[in-house]
Image (cartoon, rainbow, N blue to C red; front, top):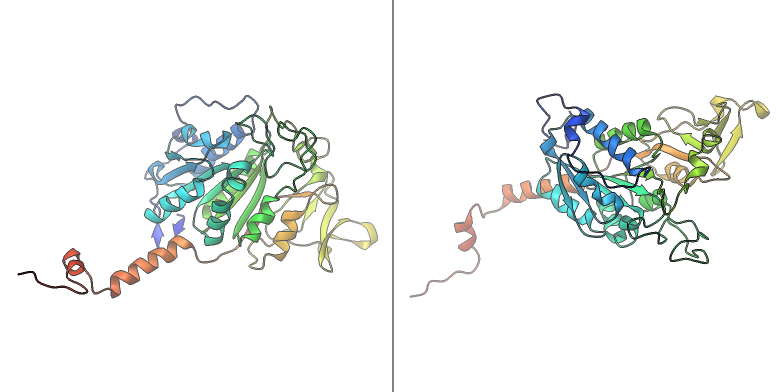
Length: 347
């Protein structure tokens, strides 16, 4: 049973299946959109988590990703642009017995919602945020977003965008994030595993999904997902295991001085024992930040759970303050409140 500090989210008394979480609503994403795979992974992981359907809450803002609450048979709130994190904060603090999940896009979360995004991470509220990163505004038809690579031609950058894009992982860790993971939409199995780890984490979990928008940013992640070279361009992290990748599992990551370095196993006497071993529970975010920042062509892109560190959560501390206030306050009822402070009689 997954626990929320001293409170437990109610477990289902019957075994649930994927079908229990399938909505009767028509899914209106474009055929081939990566969001379909994310939806399927969520429907797979929710029964595995084991809570009652009524204890799941999905919150979204605006965008293609934000249609998500309609497509999962649980409670949900389709909010306003960029405000999903604020709504989720109120939901979780008001009812800590809910498992709260936020679905958001790279524009919804890091542009109009950027302020709420960094602060929910900083506060370490126990919610799970699924960040659909397709590097474009899809719902509003192809404007560049905060993650669009510099130089990309879009509807709003006909000569190529000249803005430096965010690296979501770097942003999360810069906001003192305790959990960050990255997955790709072509790997539902890894998505399900990572989402389960996010559910277990007590604190704000961010799962960045590299998602394909087939209409306005098709093949945006092709250098990572293409069958021909994806094994050489992906590093799938596993806690406690050396960082090995490559089609022939003959490449690895070493820590040399203060930076990461890609090495070839068997060259210059390098063996698995020389490679960096992944520790996702490390409190110090230094290595996690370097992993989150790795990018092509110098490095493979790190996938899986990059960071999962334990720190006190906002909702737990709010609950503790409420209990402390109840225990120490002289005011026990409304009559006590009305008769407290300066009082006088009117004759």
